[in-house]
Length: 231
Image (tube, rainbow, N blue to C red):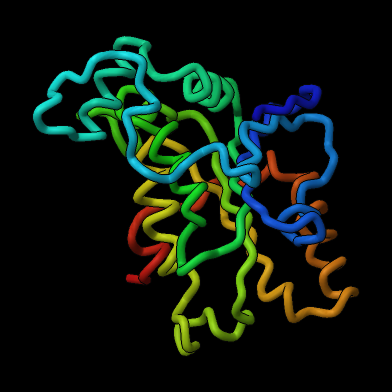
């Protein structure tokens, strides 16, 4: 599942790629820079989205009442998560910036990417109680969402049919990434590539590639309610 490229001079970018066709903007938006480390290409379907004991190599702490969160935490503390999950966590730990590239599904990530988050960003590795938000266990790292939508840009404003795009970013950026301690960069959104011309699609890819050249100079967003919902 993992795939490694050489490390760049400014920091290591780790990519979690979720795309479904070779010609998709999600796939083409991944420029071949030298400082990428592929954490996981989820296209192959190896990361199932369901809660399951298959990701734990130890006896359940409470077999009579199964709680995935509790059992994953206990397995993490014992270093008894399966080797593929431990390998994914190691790559997250080594990264300076973690990038998530995916198509927007129902204002969220596809199920297979949600499954990756549930398996990899578990308690004891990405957060603890206490140990979340600004004190999350992945503090000091950057994260960014790069996504494509089915709807056009005019649908994702406050007066649009879908509301401001920041609304659907709240659970992903704040409730997941910020909760784990990440500093979050402004998202990169390519609106409705399916309905764009070939020239417009090339422009989307070029815009993302250009941004990546100066990504290390960017400041994180203030990942609190006012950024998403206003004052």
